[in-house]
Length: 161
Image 1 (cartoon, rainbow, N blue to C red):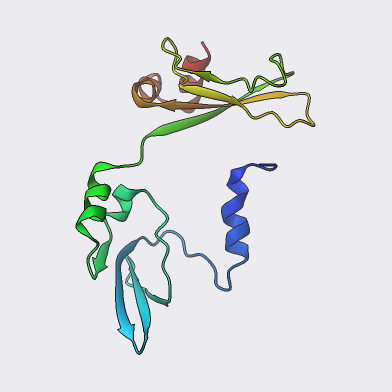
Image 2 (spheres, helix red, strand yellow):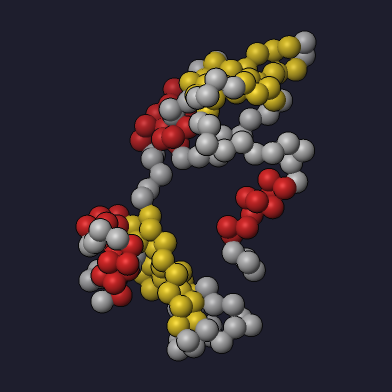
């Protein structure tokens, strides 16, 4: 994606008729039939209420399980919330003065056992001479990453050395 995926939420939010509310977690979502339409009410930690026709809960299953629902979610959804938490992942961008790997190999590295990097993917802009890898650190390697230093600089140094 030219410009990276981080630009997607603000672009979508800019198209909404009302602004996105931040820093006020949702605590409860209730739904009821009003006439022949379902009306949803979203309750927040600060005590605010928002009425909507539709509600999108865009968070991990575990975090969505912290929200109270009326009517309650199904048993299957409750089990998903408990047993499929979002994993812990660190993302690191490595930038090199020039791309030293082949243009068509994708620069993909998986299953690295000796280091902290779990997977690296070539994210170089084709118009740039600089080479960029997007690297993910997951699972046991993430635990190793977190323990490798108190500051981000110490952790990054541990990854690169």
